[in-house]
Length: 176
Image 1 (spheres, rainbow, N blue to C red):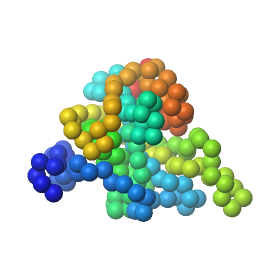
Image 2: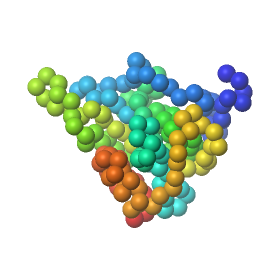
Image 3: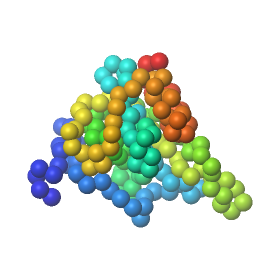
Image 4: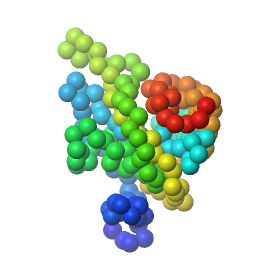
């Protein structure tokens, strides 16, 4: 990879950030019940007055939070999905920052999957709060992004029918 194809992570993490988004589900992690495991970030500014929203890849006129599939090679500690959350936030939003806390596990509120006479959530989300340190000018997915206060972000996530993302937003330190 050419030197100008990467952006350095913060000083604590010496890995380079790729300018190519990971794709496909062959290397992704699934829970014991069969749910896809996804990690993401609630990206707040330095005074926690605003959150960074990104456009949905599937519905570009809808605003969501950055998140994506956890990959097998990112599980250095059982139950810690922060490496995936940081990578997905970089790929989708072009954000680098500092993880300040784990917000929790949230089940997908959309229609569950029927599996062996039971219903399981399609996705198990793990969200972290990230204090934004830098917004890149160029990043892998180059989605639209905007800053929003709590009420606007909640309305956007409601419009996008992403109730589980609203729960993560509520658990963050974003000021109301």
